[in-house]
Length: 627
Image (cartoon, rainbow, N blue to C red; front, side, top):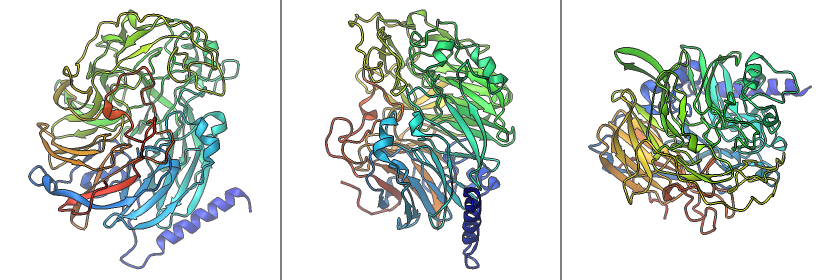
């Protein structure tokens, strides 16, 4: 029996086992319709962003401003050590919480009590894989479909586990760490396909995302985000068109464009949306190009057909990016009225400091304004959304201080939406800068990270930079600043129609934690220093603050309803001593970021680690919080 037959019979056996349940106890099967309608009741949390449009808005309202002060810990679960921050969004289905932790170890626990149901370890070859991981041994989440939990394994595998037993049903290979690829993002489901992208950090990789049959794991299609070696045939006309926007010598270094976070899906428009990473290496001088090359489709949103992976439209935020402004931040869909017209939009609070609103059917720019301090650009063209780049922000050997930093005004921390108020809640770094400069001694190395920077990681092939030069003055800036003396991290309530800040709370930053918005007029925020905070959604009044005791490595919260009780769940804490714990795409040396975005004690630099835990809260919960 060949490998394909084994996978088929294993899948059939898994389906049979899933179906063989006593009458009245058969779990509800999660299909395309269930995923599409998950946000209507909010009782379960079935996908990374709750809804296909990734709104992270739950209509649950048992917990509201009048009683949220009674919120307490209901139970906790020891996740187990493993070597990094908790960045995953848990899923809840059929009374079970599913989550993933470091080294892609996946677990299922009773959502009411925290009792473990099963635990699965993919047994990654950690010593071999870790040197190929750019930015931390992290995973951001899972997918659930037709009785299976879809697990992204950091070493490049995609595995389906039976949701009831945790036993493998099928396994597919997406990429290999030998080729400098890893997987750190949550998979998404669209039309019976599981879609996943690859991380590559600053390694010399060519970014892509691809689709597999969600029931069998069989490969369906792949979309490359940047062109390949120009000496070889192009895969399609989209790649031929993109190649004209690159220098051929630069493409020989991989091109970048990794896909490590943002995806969303519109079933009605039959479009699947993906945010793509920065061009690589960072410095345009390292890519051997001038300032007139756009480098498609890096630093962009691409919209493809989920059946075929064929490109329908693209919108590029940062043409020719050399500041590490990859566009992989949260992509959110909404239907809003703008200037009296109903618009179907896709939105992103980009790393580059601008909040973008784009027509999700056509890809046409609608509006964009800075939500943080921006010095790399003067603004956006009102018709096209193309940035008006400050000439002073282009850099060579002499350092230029630029805002935002490469850590971004908004990084991977998920935002959330309140449709009744028209507000999006954005974890942001309001003020952050980095001095960028090209290392004139840079030498490309196919086995390491290559940024072309004179400072920080991946400077070159172990080649010392030229003699340091004094920095040039910073370019003129636009957008808000953090108040004098205040930490630059904040939670912003952003009015998406009028493109302006409605309120601000001084907690958090662009990386770590995240938010969920609820029908109880609440926004729950998890802050990287370990706090769970609740605000009124309309006015931003703080109505709850709990120090969880985890104090680092915090993942985003979810909410669900079970047995007539609403719960809030989150994971946090760090893995074993000496592990790489910087969140994926976190700021590199030379960057100023808020203290709350840095790892807590036990991150880089030593100290006691905080053992990772899954915490679940409810009204009048009285379990003991971690010390």
